[in-house]
Length: 240
Image 1 (cartoon, rainbow, N blue to C red):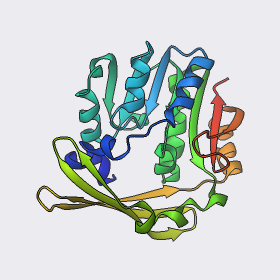
Image 2 (cartoon, helix red, strand yellow; image 1 turned 60 degrees about the horizontal axis):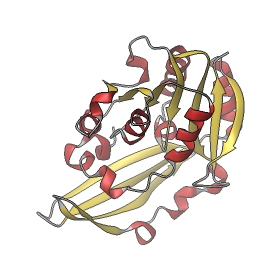
Image 3 (cartoon, rainbow, N blue to C red; image 1 turned 120 degrees about the vertical axis):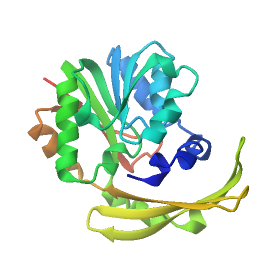
């Protein structure tokens, strides 16, 4: 599990280091477009999207294997409105939701093929007939990892109650569809340096379409991502 989600000190500053979540606007729009009332947020992390939904009257279940991140989510204002679950989608109790989502890097962060298939099956089981699964994944043709360098990413963020935190990302390995990178965090307050290694799987569009079909989904459409036009696929699949 990536340290930035599981390490309490990093989970506590995660939102401050990534404050622009306008990428979630499209997901909120789709929840309304599809007339959803009950939403399952797979890989909810620190709860930004789950709480956004709950604040607008949706019934929300958020699940994530990183306990430290879920603890942050639970402690936020409005956290009592969401049903939080520790674990991955395969550990959920029986549900019946209208929409299941995997925002940001959640889908790509499930790199093991068996775990990915298990997640798709769990989402299918949780959806009512006619319910939809929506998630995004970067188009491998864009080779996004080539821009993951310290020179392009280094920033210093003033985090309330914590102080200045310097952070940057560096690519460490590319092995076929698997791309590994390391985030480094330097805390000015005490000189601590923490790192978090992550691996993402860059799946081709036809690969994902085949996996969805094999799990019993019907692919309604593949949309463009408003925040990364031309660089990302947004899959909209339906449980028949």
